[in-house]
Amino acid sequence: MSAGDRAAVASAVASAVVIGGGAAGLTAATGLAARGVEVTVLEARERVGGRTHGIEVAPGEWVDAGAAYLGDRHTELLDILKELDLATTPTTMAGASRFALARADAGPDAAPDADPDANPAGRGDGSVTRDGRFPPLNAVALGDLFDRLAELTATVRPEAPWLTPEAARLDTLTAAEWAARELSHPDARLFFPLFLGEMMAADPADVSVLHMAFYLRSGGGLRYLNAFEGGAQQDRVAGGAHLLCERLATRLTASPYGRLRLGEPALAVHQDADGVTVRTARGEYRGDVAVVALPPLLADALDQHPAPPAPRAGERTGRGCAVKLHLVYPAPLWREHGLSGWSVNAEGPLLSTVDDSPSGTGAGVLTGFVTGAEAHRFAALDPAQQRAAAVAQAARLFPMLPAPIGFHVTDWVNEPYSRGCYAALFGPGDWLRLGPELTAPHGRVHWAGTETSTEFFGLLEGAVRSGRRVVAEILARPAG
Ligand SMILES: Cc1cc2nc3c(=O)[nH]c(=O)nc-3n(C[C@H](O)[C@H](O)[C@H](O)COP(=O)(O)OP(=O)(O)OC[C@H]3O[C@@H](n4cnc5c(N)ncnc54)[C@H](O)[C@@H]3O)c2cc1C
Image (cartoon, rainbow, N blue to C red; front, side):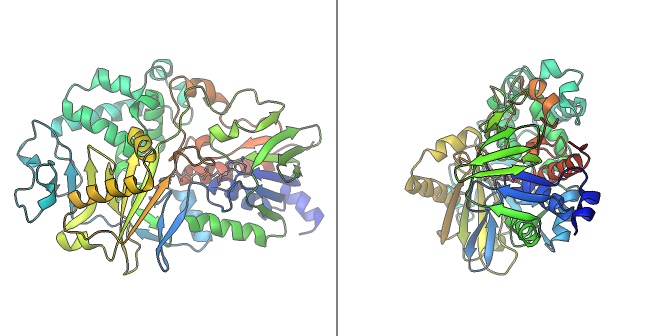
């Protein structure tokens, strides 16, 4: 493309520095490079992908240590996957579930397995096998919980949660305070934190009611977010979600306009009348504009001059708390026993498990989610204690399985370049204060990242949408 063509396509902007090589930053960078903008991506880690990350559990068999699932409504993500020649594969969820939701007044449905051969190690821990995914708890109490959550969710203005009619009230309470007031049945109280841990990797004490309701709405509503078939967990990226960013990075560096610097965290962003200088420990990068594609707590760690009118995170903004575990078996052996691999458990470390076996004929992989407050407790254990606790619990839940042949722990809570996962948690006061500035460019600095997307906030889809939004913003900038 000649300089003249480029000017015609790329509007007033000829160069950009993108901070962060996750899905958002790389979507923005490839979009800009495709329009002839000279782009440099600065990535802190020695790999691209951020909160997507692949682990090779057997030769050629990969599992997702970070983001894994997507559904039909994730249209922009599906669009990019198609462009990159990446296929999706359905998540396997056939068979019965296991539940260890110990409770004093369990009904007949919740009786522990009577057949010791079916579950010898489960005797006495209250664990049960049950068809489907609905937990063996009081159905009316859980129905009431979901009705109340659905009512709350329906009140939110998804494109501007801070303008929700009752925003001030909803942004004062934490979800824990809401539950203490609203949920009287012990089963609803037991299940609510497990549900929030699974959906948001949040302890209810760490999020405002407004953020909880917004998150559920933004992701497509309670049912969609919670569902496998027909919902947000329907599919995975064949070969691993990390391939998305790897292919975007390949596309970027194959372009005459794209550069990628790994292992180079941005430290400072200084604007002047003519452009932006981004400083790292190794040097300085100059662009007409910069894109900050980082989680909010990390965006605020940049030394910015002039300072933005509002911080990206508030005093109560927290880290999502998730540690992801992978237990690897020679094959998905639970399937032979009519089990799906899905379990939900009142006690950790494995608060839930799911069959994430790669789609080939090889290894069987159970993914364990350790979320919320349990993630902090687990992350503080040493590796031997972590393994012992997880393997012992898996043996109680799935006594027919041999000892795993592989075990992997991915602790996102303590990842310095993520600071928590799945996404930042907005606490009381955050949305009212931060919301109005969420996407407004600060001079020559534009904001991307899943936490800047009011659609599918916290998900890969949100990250991709934010990257595309920023490309449109930059191309529409007036000259000067
Ligand atoms: C365990 C887990 C499970 C998840 N499950 C799902 C799921 O099933 N489906 C789904 O859609 N989403 C899921 N998510 C969320 C999804 O991963 C994120 O929404 C998405 O990856 C965010 O992309 P991003 O580009 O906004 O941010 P990030 O991926 O965090 O990218 C930011 C990048 O910036 C880099 N960086 C940080 N600081 C600096 C700096 N100073 N200078 C330069 N670079 C820096 C980081 O290394 C990172 O690469 C999950 C996340 C986790 C961790």
